[in-house]
Structures are given as C-alpha cells and as structure tokens.
Length: 112
Image (tube, rainbow, N blue to C red; front, top):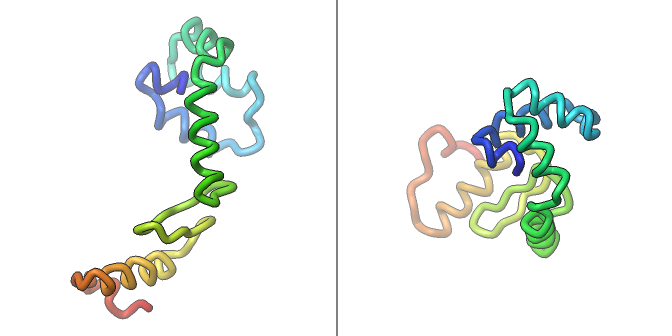
C-alpha cells in the first residue's frame, strides 16, 4: 500500500513475488529504492501502520471466504485454491457458462 500511494503497486508487487523469502524490512526498503520511490514517504507509511486497518479487513474477508493463502480464485462463487492449470480453470468456467446457458469459447470447448 505504501508503494501504491506512490503509483508503484504492481511494480512493488512483482518485486515481492519475485523474491519469496526476502521480505524483511531491509529487503522492502531496497525494493522501494530500486523502484525509485520517495524513501521518506515510503518509510513514514510503513512505520506508521496507516494501512493496517485496511489490510486487516482484507485478511478477515479472505479468511471468511475460506482462503488461507495465495493464489486464491473465485469463479461465480466457486473457490479454487492454489495455482491451477488452464484446464482446471476452463472446467469450472465452462460449467458456469453452461449453467448460465452461455456459449463456451471454441478454445475451451473440448475441456471438461
């Protein structure tokens, strides 16, 4: 959220997911420097916990929906936990399209 405040949410996101296990404060500060963030503003944001309530609310919502980790996906309320191959998504999406009497894309028609 501190990076988002400076318009670099996805860039910071990519740094975090590209460096699993390297999420200590020193690492976060280095990622912010690498992205050219205003360090004074970034450090003030993470030091103040100004986004804690928003993050806690997001975590609670995920837990209430049954998600305990990432990635997690919902397709019309159907929960898919973890990284899944295209075919598994296509089966769920095709079933939902069929249920709604909507056409299935030709590329996915032979799946599921």
